[in-house]
Length: 153
Image (cartoon, rainbow, N blue to C red; front, side):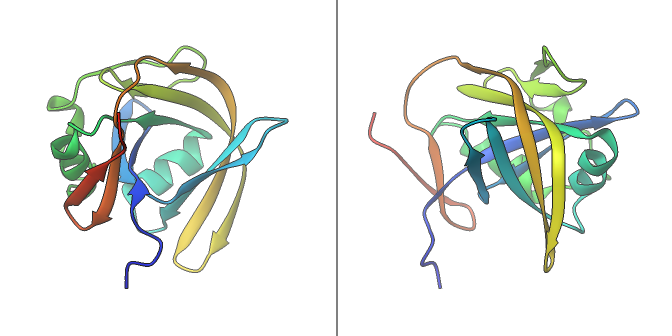
């Protein structure tokens, strides 16, 4: 049942003790205007779960409708087994110790301020400490599995 879909796809990057990772998510939401907070929902079995929990920061990368291949690569492979950034270009965040995607249409650098469990997922709430919109255009939305759509440009 796909009642809540399509959902906008984001890539969440993280780093802990020199190990960089990026994961694909479609469960995320703004959580507050003042202070500006953003929430992401991460499976507790995911490699990124541990990196975010330990590093206390993450970067939300909004991607183009043309980046479905990057979303599949980041979502179908574990950072425990491969370095996803060998195939995805990165650059350094400005305010947190974390990589971000060089191709991102927009990004938000977040400092973790709260977390709580919701069944098999954890909600990480981040305070947005730096953000930038780089370019406009259709964003990537997930319909189901590896099936995507976009917004009107």
